[in-house]
Image (cartoon, rainbow, N blue to C red; front, side, top):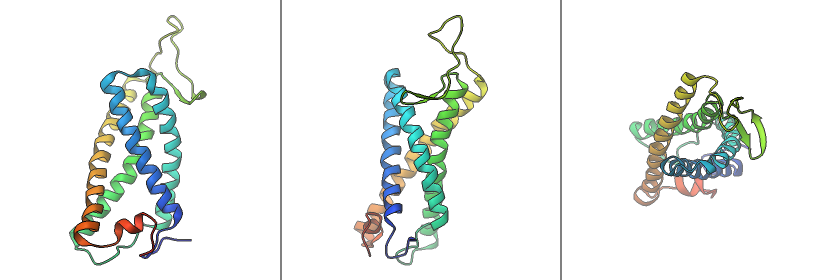
Length: 185
């Protein structure tokens, strides 16, 4: 089954909302962790980030197979262009955030766990077992930079995306938001 102008598939709708909720939650958690030095939350953040990466990968493949949804009505060229820029920025950003997070954790020597299952071993310092040794500081810092910048871009695009959905629904009176809620239009 494929998305149509009148109705999006249940898969499209569920993937959209799971990724949206997951990204927003992990961004908020990430901000909280860094602002409050809440190091005990990092394993939870990383675990849900790994899970979300797999969902995002599936959603990305799904989106490219199904293409972006067709507009529900005629829009200006500028609206269509902005829509594509925001949608593709969100797709790329939702991929870059978890990938750069995993790279940052790996190259900094902290490894990656999915809850208690080790995916990538930490590089434990043999002389100080409570500490780790970075595998590559430059790559860890580069991944950290990409992680932070991608988060800002995604937060900005999510804001634009929400504002556009509200504009479509309340100002334009069209059915974009209803369709994204799984309703037939």
